[in-house]
Each structure stands twice: as C-alpha cells, then as structure tokens.
Amino acid sequence: MKLMRDIEADDYEKEVKASMKPVVLLFWIRSCDKCRRFKPVYEEISSKLYQKATFLRMNMLKSLENLRLAEELGVEETPTIKIFCGGAEAGSIFGFRTLEEALSEVDVILGSDACSDPQPSSSN
Image (cartoon, rainbow, N blue to C red; front, side):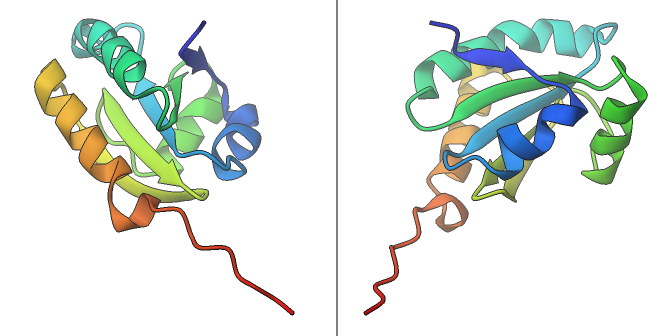
C-alpha cells in the first residue's frame, strides 16, 4: 500500500481542500539537501500516522504552478509541512526535523482542535 502520493498544483483543490480526512502536505525541492535527508523521515511519519491523515508531497520547482501555490500558502523554506483539516490550514512545520521531533509536531497538530471532527448538525 502506498502511504504517500506526489501531487501537482492542479490536484490541490481535490486532494487537499476537498478532503474529508486531514492532509499532511510536504513542500520540497529535489535539489535541496535538507529535503533529501528529510524524505525518509517524512515516509516514516506517513507510515506511523497513515490512519489519521492523507500524506502528500509537492515538488515546488517541478512547475511554475507548484511554486505559485507554495508561495500563496506562505512556504518560504524547504522542507515545509503544512497540515490541513477540513480544507483549512491547521498548522505548519518549517525546516528539517528529526523523526521524533517531526512525528511529535505532526501528531500534536492532528490532535488539535483545528483537526477535531466537527459534530454533525441535527436538522429537523
């Protein structure tokens, strides 16, 4: 089972904004040393937390549209993780982290009020 998928800016609305499940999105650049070192860390996070969220990656420099979206979302360095719940940004993690640090930070954001499931409204 593939726990992490690569997306492009064209996929953002469907994969992130319209997702019913929390989304953890890594912005990275292929030529970035920190990004290459962080890749196995991110893969390990996705394997440990795959039941809580959908894990995606976007190479910022793969296309101009990817770069524009990253800039619109305030990504100023790589690697950057953005976590979305209900289509809204719930938190960000900037820069390289160890597995323990990144796992803890992602888990805290996924467990925050911003990511708690809204109670269904009852309408009669």
